[in-house]
Every structure is written in C-alpha cells, then in structure tokens.
Length: 164
View 1 (tube, rainbow, N blue to C red):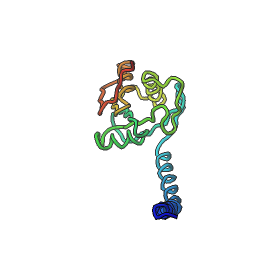
View 2: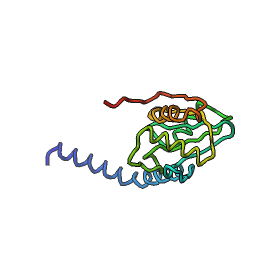
View 3: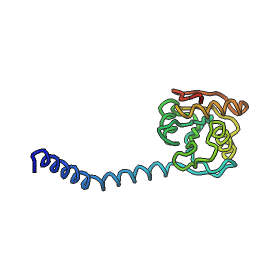
View 4: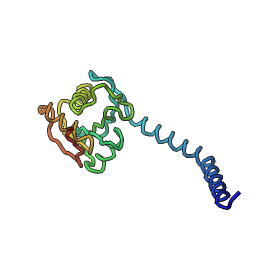
C-alpha cells in the first residue's frame, strides 16, 4: 500500500469515528430544536386551509410575514428586535414552511388571501403589516388587495422579483 493510500485510509477512519461519535448528539440537538419550534405555534383551520401561526404581546396588531430563512419563528425573532413591546404580533408560517402546507396556487396574491383568512379566523379587522425579505411580496399584495384592513406597510430588506 502506498503512503498516500495509507494516509487517505487513516483520514477516512478518523472521519468515520468522528461521525459515529457525534451523530447521536447532533440528532438529539436537531430533535430538541424541532420540538422547540413546533411547540411555540398553533395551526388554525381557515377558509384558505390550515395555517400555522404564533401570536404574542398586547396592543395594536402587527402581521409579521417572514422571509425565506424560517417560518413563524423568524417573524417573532425579527419583530422582537425591531418592534419591542406594546404590540400584538401575529406571525404566520407562509405556504410550505413548517406546518403550513404548500397549495397548488402559492402565488403572492394567494398568500395575501391566506393572510386575510388567518386574520378573519382570529377576528382581527385591521393590522399593520411587516414583510421581511421574501415575505415582502405577499405583504405588498395584502396591502393592495385589502387596503381597508391595512393600517401601514413596512418592508424590511424586501426580496421581490418580477418574473419574466
């Protein structure tokens, strides 16, 4: 066996041992993180189908629509940093994230309608809307489609695109 083959074999064995030793802890950490995320929200049946969301705080309602990096949890995290106390935060998981299913029509307009369905199910008539990154498209659609329900619109690093 050549020296290079021996080195590669030894490195392969070391990597295999590291994986075998660390995988159970990794699996445990992932399971704990998933449980933590899933326990902080509810799934509500709406006219638009099931929608996962979390609601925290007291005060004027703010619909916080997350970007591509997470579900309702990202909305809560960003709102805590940017809004602070004094608001009722409604943070849904968009279509296809966490426990909100991905429907046939997952367009920003359909997502905006789903936001309205969620607010209807929660008996909320008007909200300020905060769209984060990829959540900006459906947030803008909500404001355009439901101006009577939108008190304000804030976009944080809006990730919008024009198909073409």
